[in-house]
Length: 594
Image 1: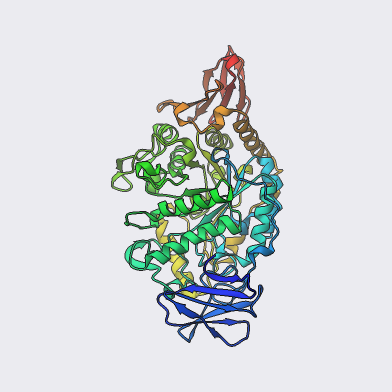
Image 2: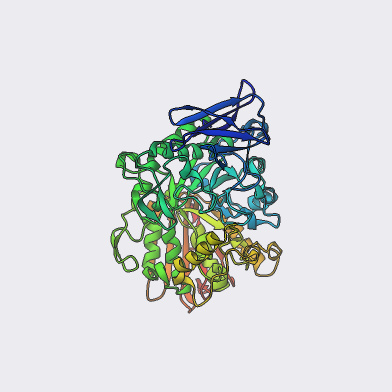
């Protein structure tokens, strides 16, 4: 890192701060008198020979304002107090042979560090790595871990973007987790937030023009990516991405809500970020990826640069979720009102974006662009995630909203799709714990504003219930996974289904090849029946049959195929297969039996 507190090869610690809006900066280490940094253009720097790793320090701006370091690697006392000097070389890595996964091999498991295990720490996550490997996932995706106010938060209120949260285990805890994951053959994906900062403990605007009123986001003023003084702002976030790649060996970044990143310059920030990130990964000899969350349905996000795109490696496929969940649950609230037809599931599977320039009633305009020509590995698909569960008042999971057989069908559609599948923690055993939005802001006015804003933002999904108070400790505690349910009847069978289909996805190239162009989907809207066929150049073949109706249905399949089903096993009747109510069957065949 160029900025922040860096141990010097000459001995001591070098402090370098970029602060064009500040006249003077001093650094106060422990209880020693503050010492003034020398100014060189927009940068301030000093080498202190008596400073060392473990020392705590604050920056004193313009002689009076004590602030944490924006580039702090550690905030052990919270977002308002002392920063800590960290020696990044003090951790001993053992993953030297790890070079990462191919993108098509990613099977994501999204988790929240604070609620995934009883301890709520990186160490707790590490204790479950063997379980996750046995499940069959290949990558753990951590919701944001940058230091946020208090000890309870989703992570999207982070303000010290270089400091892994102290309550989770800080820098050494996160490095230990990544190192352990790599030893198990699991990649680590980190969720990062480059569209806004949290409302409490955010001091960046005092250092540089980080924010602009030219654009507005749901979280307030936008990050200044294209206005006066934006060069340093862009560098700050690019440095952050490379920091996770280099110092923490992170394999991929999931970039939150890029529709909140506004940049009308000639070279979009995301394209610049992509170039720097990939160049550094190549220099390190590792595979590393950037995956966006986007509400734009803009193919430029994932389109190759030679076609004018930003060339990010992938993006979340929200409309896969919307089409499937609206069909299964009948929900038509908010944006789900644009969905509810099997033909939309077909389009989501075979093309990607459902709204690709057609009219959206919810948005009251034509929306989106076509992603038909983009390969399947550019999309991360899911049947639930942290947002889609928690943005209802009750925080209910899909397994609580539909029958066991319907849920099994959703699982099979996800894992047999030509996309990179993502599971949200606990869904693999149909956990009954809700996942709700929680915070622990220390400023009462901020806490009230956040709570009121969330109720307004998601009023369409309240379903007559009240959102739980995000600040209440109980809201956080009830969101912890209930690991005791793994072995209970019904839940253990769901876990077995996930394991079985994930294993088949890995074993059969027709399921794991991400070839949209070799995927065919037929639907019957009246009969509420869907048939998905997956092919492969090797000749192997898979057929998934799904019955979305409330009536039993009979289908015939070629002999010699093996069958996998949810619910009651089908019965052979005159060469046909009976698919139970609201259930699905998967058939796999080698070339020799076709």
